[in-house]
Figure (cartoon, helix red, strand yellow):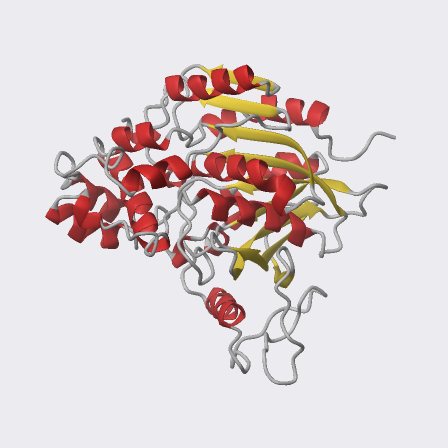
Length: 413
């Protein structure tokens, strides 16, 4: 794997927020919202943008909290967005794998002008790997909008763009790394939450995801009808999606840049599925790997790439003691979290870099062939001389053209 093919948002490099008071207050607000703690946030204030201004409080005088998925809990106007773009950091309600009410953080961006008749189509973005810990949420980065591939182009084309952090990232919550149902619900509920801002967000939705985010939006598409029937999912677009998890894990453990992905996945599953029965790391990992995985799972690709690489490098060739693809309950969990085994109702756009060594082109092509065989309307593009880190950006011109014909920003007429 080349240096430029390093894991996902390592290429984007927005430095993690430096614990400035405003970001620290936002994280505290997320904690309060997640735990429904009584009281206010002393010393924290939020700008009066008309969207959830003032201190976050939850006490006896407050009305009982709703548990409606997609309900907006708080929004904070972001400074520094490009001219003509309005953006917010948001907290909203979603549900986890077990159907429990959780609070998830994310971003919303929209044209800073009145919406057209019929409102704007919402593009719900699934981000690639930035880590798995709470501090690794893209919305907490110093330049959060830069973590969304094509955000400026999409907003200038007239779309509302929403971007979930996923559960447990940016706000307290359960692990969600490559936990398909949780990620998918978070993607759908972000689109729901945008409708509570005065930006013209409609029920029309296009899903757009890259790498881990491709996995997330495919699960969102699979469960959209039963989970969010009021949303009209018109299009599903992915770039180098994490689809064949068994093959991906096989590739990942052979390289330090991919090994961290395996560590995030296995640590996440060990936590989320602890009672079903518990998947224990010691059953598939060497003693050194089992000891190192919890530390790897704490590190973010934003600003801890060197430590991630150094620790992962020591485990190459001595990570697995048994094959998780044939060891239960790991094998069943991998199968359960592998998307795309049934036909998609909405048209599908798939972009792949020919030089990608993390998500290999043959894996993506097998997915495309399967979906076409099932009857899905698939548009696919393989881009030469393009590795994993570059694919979502080099695919943007084709994506924008495809969206214009499949899920336009505003209804015709």
